[in-house]
Image 1: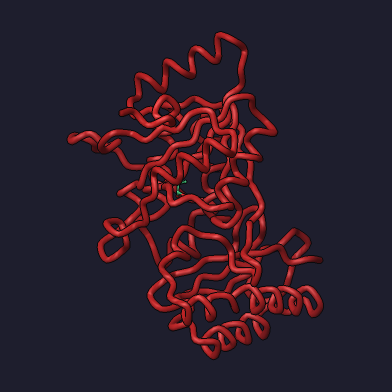
Image 2: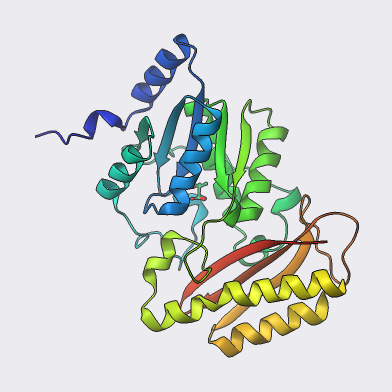
Length: 287
Ligand code: PAF
């Protein structure tokens, strides 16, 4: 028996294009939220944001292999499509695109070299990542052809990189960022948070407080290094197994500010691992 949600889920590029063309013929505007599924309230906030700027909303669920590398969690990435569909339906999403099979043909031979804000930070630790994100986001934007697309500020470097790509490649879409949605203790919502056991979850919950304290100290003193060093020590003391970076960067270019704040807005960005789960988070530094 077909699921009551099945008309709302499509799997083929042809169906996707037909729906979008029909909407366009009725002067609807199209908003797009790409995801890898395992949805939570943070994703739903992206749908709400998209609904503020477009009349029909498409969400894709696709676990993109090109942004994972060996040893990462591609095969175990959480999947919950039935629950995802229900959440999206209730959030007012109009269409869920879950491609059947790989979006990369057997002869796929194109890669994208990304620069600008993609350099440094995540790229120092996951050099494959933004090339993979650039490919899939470009492919999905070409398939959906939305007027606007929404990405979360939790992946702040990803958001800036996607803005760069769409601008550089003349993809006619407006990119919106949506604020980070947090759990009660401040942990940024993430599909990977479901990997935590109780003890690790308690450790992870301390990241936000350490990050806020660091950002406050920097905004009060203007000095970066002592505050970021203190934050690294605090993370390790709290039980994080390793810290990839605690860095301050220009909020627009992501150029690293090693010593003092400049004239422009700055962002504090952190990546740290807690019991095999790598967390990223970021916040504005008030001036
Ligand atoms: O942020 C994500 O969930 C993914 O990187 C994205 C943008 C859906 C591309 O696979």
